Length: 102
Figure (cartoon, rainbow, N blue to C red):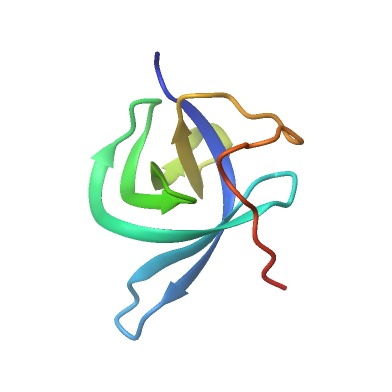
């Protein structure tokens, strides 16, 4: 099954050299999850597009998080995550616990 692209909000940290590290991911329904980055490289996505790929661990599950120039989104830079399942806002993720980071 081809992975599905989910555009997400991501909180990042920039170091003094300008390198970006994703820290948290936020789903459209507001739930947020802490990320652990295990690899960074330029790569193509199985759902289309190419850019900076972050291999991340989200609540014990490995996923690919992409930072790309998405021409389908008016040529804007954006984040999306690959998933084997399509999630709608309000869906319950049984294996992942959301965190609050106010």
